[in-house]
Length: 134
Image 1 (cartoon, rainbow, N blue to C red):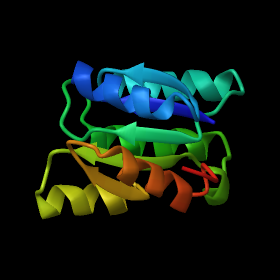
Image 2 (spheres, one colour; image 1 turned 45 degrees about the horizontal axis):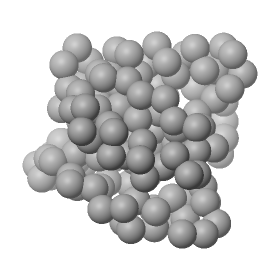
Image 3 (cartoon, one colour; image 1 turned 135 degrees about the vertical axis):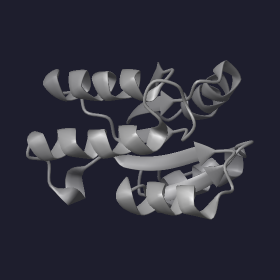
């Protein structure tokens, strides 16, 4: 499995990478702009990401916009809905409107509130069919 971790906070990125490294090859991006570029590069190299862990509040391009751009990149590459990357929002936000917009407009599959709990993340990975055990 290949994972792109997108968060402007070093500790959040590091913790997610620590949890995920036994299950996946992890790349990181510090903002939405870097995330979209990394996602495009992975598709170009024919090494697509299976999962994107996306923070919502970041500089440059925020998480909601980055998710919409990632979905546009997938459409441009002819990737059907069943084959697209899974996106898990990882955020401190409790704002219902921001969460709703990210889930539906960005087509995220899950929302995990920070601080992320390892068990909750692994449960989501199993639910999404990305890991078979935890």
